[in-house]
Amino acid sequence: MLVFGHRGSSFAAPELTGAAIARAFDIDGVDGVEVDVRLSRDGALVLLHDRTLRRTGLCDDARLLSTPVEELTMDELRRVDVGAWKGPEFRGEHVLSLEEAVQMVPEGCKCLVELKSGDAKIVEALARSSVASSGKILVIGFDLELVAAVKRRLPRVACLHVQRIHPVRLFAALGLDLYSWYRPLFSTVDVSLLDRVQELGLDGIDVPSDGSDETLEYIREAKRRGLLVATWPFLTTLTQSDTEPARQWAERAGVDIFVSDLPPKPTRSQGATATSGAASLESWKSRSNLHKFLRFLTRGSRLLAL
Image 1 (tube, rainbow, N blue to C red):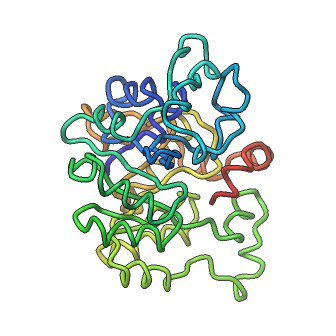
Image 2: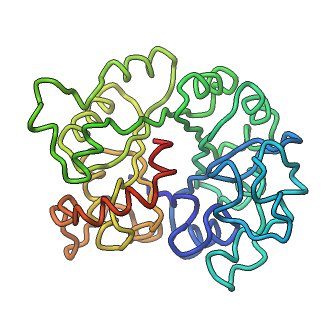
């Protein structure tokens, strides 16, 4: 199983910056990084998770922080400091282009490119870019039709559909086990979605690792169908004691790519299959419901995107 840094090593460094990507490869020894990509007004593929720079940007010009990225040029975006919010040592980090990010990816490693929004314009921009033929990218996204359009345009690039959190599993992760109460009424595994992924010729899926048996079986069904599976820890605290058990769960499920803000050790140079005896899988699965609920409230914008 490969280990990828989510937005680089975004626990230790400002997300989607050169510092986060460099740390992911040079210190954490990951096999790849996941990045979020949007299209600027002048057609540049830029690394940015949110639609604006309000959360991660610092700039004297308030307009550059509040204006949607699709209404700003690359030159305008580069005027915003996207590192100082994380700490003074990161001051001066600027918005990266996708090309710059992929250039930082070592040979043999990969970049998981999530298309956060867009239409045919972002597909064409990706197809025209140098990264399309780099052999280093995989493309993911929540918009099934958009990812399918990328696959048709770039058939040699692996494309995965990011699957949304089922409401019942969301409540279960928050400590409200509706699934066990209403099991006959709800299905948390929609196998028909796997059918659609295959019909569109996609290469795999990206699902949250919520620790449930339902998700475990869903992943195994995807693997039986020959699909690639990527996953990320859902509603867990970002500590080594949590990410390592989450990695163990993903490995047990047969996942191909495990994505985390805090890439768990061992690193790429040490091999990605060792198991930490100190980590407790059950402890991770039964993490404090109160803490999870607080994270649900404070990270609402990210969860809404799921």
